[in-house]
Image 1 (cartoon, one colour):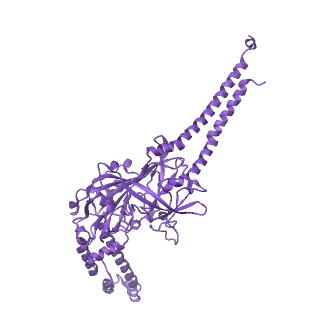
Image 2 (cartoon, one colour; image 1 turned 180 degrees about the horizontal axis):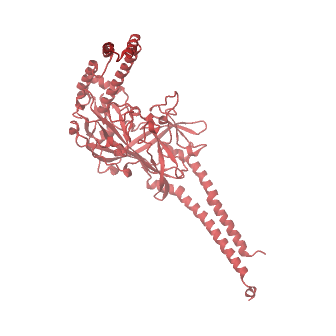
Image 3 (cartoon, rainbow, N blue to C red; image 1 turned 135 degrees about the horizontal axis):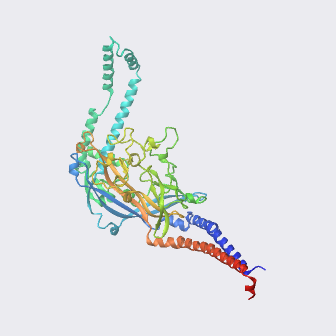
Length: 572
């Protein structure tokens, strides 16, 4: 008959195996299925309600570069800036669902965003604070005008040259020149032919010094006062509320040519410029985003593949953007125009160490890759930290196989010979229909070609790098966000008096941080629904495994001990 200690030992081994099976197979499978069910967006589900209205608002922080020497800048001095802020806003997002796809794997919606100023978080700063900042709307108008005129003239000149070169008489003259060039006694003939062709070109060519163009620029220069409220410099004295949301007014009761210019600005369709009730115009950075939503998103619901949940499938009924340059091969979409990832309000579940993920930002018209950095703990919740890499805005150009970002829309600015900007800067002209340049805050990591021309910048990776901490199982963001800076080139523009003494610099305007920090209520909810359950299952796993092994080992030792005792000792 089996000794009782062997039976107990066997039971302990069975408990240990059950603990191991549960901890390393059963429980992970159960958790995986439970997480899958919880993240899938199905009509009427809890996740659907959280999808339509985020459980807590995002934090939207704005830092403004106040200009301390505007008058000196007008005379060629290097700009000196001082960061003020943060001005903190609560960003509420509401999704108006249009429909689900037939198989339930896609959901289409329009997202509305609303901003509320957070006085407590912003203190001591208020929206009434007065600032001196870059006059974005005037600077943008002048540069866009310069670019469009240059494009028109260049295109016209190219067509004239093409027509000239295709003229039979000119081709004959060129071939004759090639044959007799440098051969006496025909050198004098060569000179006559060269003079003849150049004279023909000079008659047809339109250039920067064309009288018609000069007259146009003179009229523009004369009407800047009427259009932009008699500006004394390239900087505007205004309030934070006006600069960011309410709008800096201009085009107030314009007449004649000034009115025509204002109508042209209005018809350009810029999102940041809105017509007021009195017919004037107003510029603001974010006024157009407050309470409105226009882009139509189609995202994955996670049905059929939970790892794709919330990944953007279409934007405005298109799988790709039409913003950046495409490949020369007809019909082939460049990597720059591809839409990848989520909108950063949440991320796909089941993250792994060493992986990467994408977010898509409509504000900058591009997808951004985030790379795993380290394990973290956020108020007792385990997660992974992800951050942007060098391929965001540092490594851009043909040598990095992403020259599609080099739109080369800016004339007479600080850029490389191939048209790409230097490291750390991205031209958003084709994205925003305005000559806006993207950098990291305080031009973190940007080329010295830009940073050396501005005083007052204090780049700090801890403060200015984009990062996000994500819960490993569910993909829920714990803290972090996007951090970017918006700039414009400040430069001299031919025949525009107010710009004539300017030094060409990349001028910072504002930088923003858009992200989340899970609040106490959400932390408690998260711990109750997931973390505490995981801890309980972990305890069961290790209690069963270690307890079973312990009981089995002790019982077996006891049995061996009993077997080894002398029979006489047992008799006694």
